Length: 516
Image (cartoon, rainbow, N blue to C red):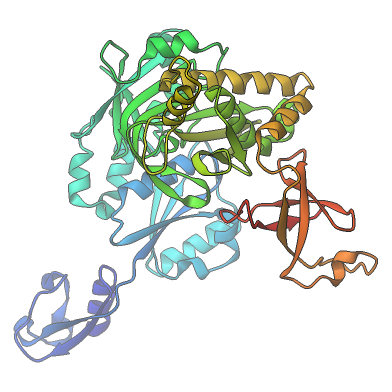
């Protein structure tokens, strides 16, 4: 039928309600020559397509996941490419595709990455065939290189973005600076870096005169890296003069202005200990998805660590955020800077100076931890800076002026962190925990916790009679082996609690329990 043909054609491209009137034909979102009017003896000029706009809903593009980690980079690339005004990109595992048909609702395109001989399971393949029979579009990808993705996704890429991606180097790429202890040529030949060049993360990194990248899709935020030279804001010589590590911070990039240094670490792993040092951030990453604009003078870094599960700190990787905070506090030196659990750096118990965020994933047999840390080192806003406090302290004591440069602070923090990791590897992690307790604000502090009812059917346990939402007062003892807060109630019972994300208040804590 004519109405059905036009409806199917238009609905395929636009969420519009279609009606017909016997007036002059108005071409809307389709080519009238593609409609076979002759079957009903109708003239083109006799009909009009009236388009009354309904509520706009974005259509779905689903990437079938076979190996979650392997396809994470592909998903990010597709998400970055497609028209975000029209499409939402999801990654759905093939097992889910095979078990239900609900994913078909609103799905415009199904992208199936097939490479290295991988095959879909039979249930998944059956439902994909059903989707195809219902008019859905299937895009089979044998590769995730630049040319393949551009060709396969061209109908869904905004024209302006497609034009911007036509060049290997983006028109608006910025410069960054790179240092590698083993030399730039050796660093560029590292397998991790070769993988990164063809599988960029959220932020692209390229080298000057980099060749053979015609098959690489670059993110909209991309930096072309040059070696350090005199006159650059980050003084690499001062940094290296203070750096005593074996691997942390021995390979690094310095970016003048970036969305977030954590974005640079996303995607394929870098060599262990790789660091990103931005001068400014426009969307710095905090805990709970918080975003921060970092002004000049704020000392920031992100570093990637590879941990072996079951060895050293790899036995309790959740402790790492506490170690990074402690390393930063020790790097500051003669100032009463303390740690506020779980991840904040404070001057006494008065004002926040900085904080730590840690994201983790698993790659192969290792934990990959991306660590971000920011500290108000020279910026007086929004609160106060470390160097302001150091100058004031020096003035009061009548001594020689002591301030710390960004390069010194970051190098010392890396030195301290690597030393703590070495202690955990040597079975001396308890010494680090003791140092942590000396530097934090909470020993003996009385706080309230929001207690939860125990779901287990065990009438002998006191917790079973506690109603959800009850508040009890406890005394903070310290942190446990995993970094949770260890507390004791008035009956002498001890248990561990975790924070609720943001609202732990030093004077009137309200935190959620994790009963041990």
